Image (cartoon, rainbow, N blue to C red; front, side, top):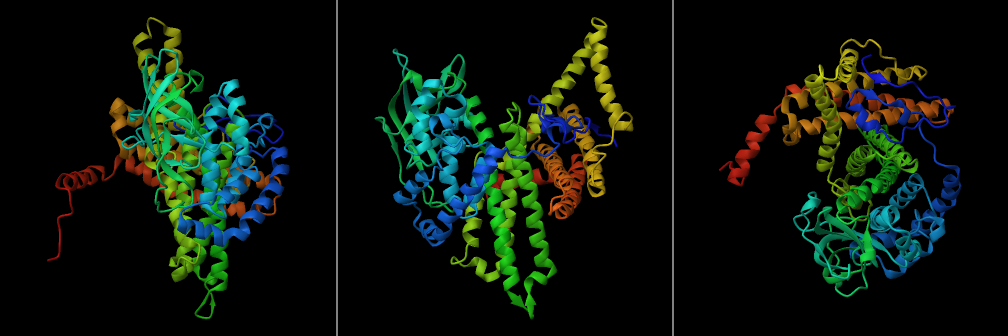
Length: 592
């Protein structure tokens, strides 16, 4: 095949992970970076031992409360005594180190806990997750020793619940346009003023991670740790939401709030870096919650299909119902495989996993929305009734493609991040051409590297087969990813040469690149996990092989469509239709 691959690691290879490299970004160079994809990671033993009783305790606590959880969704609130019970269970200290009173779970174990709570109620997961994934994560990642000592013990017990304050009216996806401002005072403190909207845990938080414009020489945004009890800090009423209704979502206002100099989080002017690091690091919580929700939907759908009879037999025997359950299972396995691969990167100290995190979030959030739609469909009329769980899951799941970066923005981020590195190599190539005769050794070295990649892509010479020892089903599937990783590399080069810096404005092309890369990364995670299950003679290995084969066939069709779309598409026609309608402001036709 034409893909560039690295030597296959074996289970005896203790640690093949390259912590300073991104497997997802390497895909844009036509490289399936096996060191960071195989073998599939395992959760550390300490976490496995802790999780078993924790998951049972969560089920014992939330299982009998399903009627209450549904009632609280209607009322749009979680009672104070319920929040206290979450504190008592230690669910606000999941990822805080033991030295500060937390449970010190890995990201993988933390995501598994949120998967369990999400199988009962998304609002519960959100209350816990907004605190740990983003609310207090900045203190954990960037806090000074003094900040950690002051806040983490109270955050671990839930005495302080945390919230993340970034979004403003007019500054959602465009976080750099925030208007909340902090001005430095003569004594080194800051005066903070502004308002944040749609803040999860806003009404119950005792601590806010707040981002404000500071317009310093070092940068235009700074992060601050702000206590809710300080003068000038207030929050609005509970928002009336479509889904996740019981969780607290409010505005949070800051009126001339004095913030001590020691409550700057990270460096002055580096707030955007802090915000992005928090969001990237926290996406496994959202992904884990999505996986837990899908698993529960599969369980509900199977029970419904097995119990409901039509035409004298259970609807589980009908092909179109079985197709839905199979697809939900494929999507769940794939999402789970990608989410826990990303958690492994974070837990292992990788420094560049933001693209993989974005990919896992996009895939998992869209997978649960498809699953919720299909589970409701299997339930038929019952699915539309509020006494059954389906309609609430549909409402709750809808936010996930908006939360923590909309999927549209994340697709653009995935594509442009991959193209940035490819563009840098092309820029180096251009420079090498100009300087070849001044510095012939360096010039020919760069040209040789570029030429060899192009030769591999064109002829396949010098390329090893990927995963030679795989089960035959996986060997065939691997060939698909070998083929399309080369297509991604070719498309990346072609788009950069065609548009140059103007590629930033070509969003249709970026979406195709992103979707192609997502299928490649998620597909490799699926292969890696299936390979691990086969090697271990797992009881479900055969089913995993079937899923890997089906996911690959479906991905191949999607990838083929996206590759063709790079050259032959309807983008101009779509733009013309949209432009005409936007200019007119309405739909013009009628039948009368």
